[in-house]
Image 1: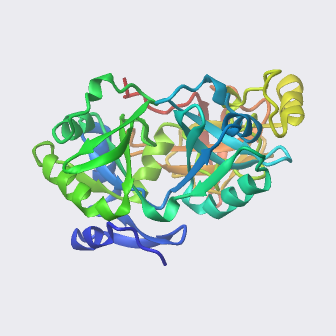
Image 2: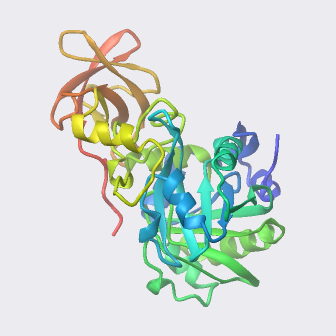
Length: 364
């Protein structure tokens, strides 16, 4: 297994380590609930250096992105980022990602750790003249500082005016004694915060500086387990659970990042246009448990007559709400908020209600 540059810090902090996407990563330090609530109410630091970073450069970089990514990259300007996905040519999703525009001919894609090689192969297979691709995943470190107190912690150690850095914008600046750090107002928690990208050789210096700066705000290191519960409370999709090569962005409720304009020559454009016009047979929904129980990945979803209508894709006991929550695909018609469904849990049919996402709203 690979290890990130922060592995010594995880071990010294007593993290429970697990294998994830080919890396040995911290699952938790002091417990899921404590770490989750630290981010939701205060501030936490995540090692997300296993994520992938792929650069796209050249005179046709924008045209290339308009072909391979679902969102409208022409709406970007230097210093702005957008959430998007890569259609797979069959109506499914290669990966979801964040696209950052550096200048008119330079873009950075941040992709999921488990999909780096697949994404790279897909992009290379569709490369066009005037486009250069570079995979910098192995030498780029990434930390996510998340939570309502993240601005206070980071502002203490950077001259960048964070108040002027709005959501889904980024800049480069100094953090601690390290210059050239990309600071992005993005994240996967819904609690606000920043994602920092830098040369991995500078990693430990930045980690230590942030942890030291955060002492007065009780900054805690956070593992992958709390990262998952935080994103689920916000209804954010997890690739491999809620979206994959067999799910379309329309089914997954990602029509808002699927732009089918006349000027955009998107892979799968006709398939996705047909789905938008004619509808789909299933949709991804959020649900809250009414009966006491915890939904889990691949549990089945039933109607009130015991007929199977779908499958749970993600589920947990929400640390914020203290109740079971989940997402899953259900037959169209059962996706309306207020619908009562049943989750098959340990040979019991437990009642749940379809609800609007996100499950909580605590970010500005």
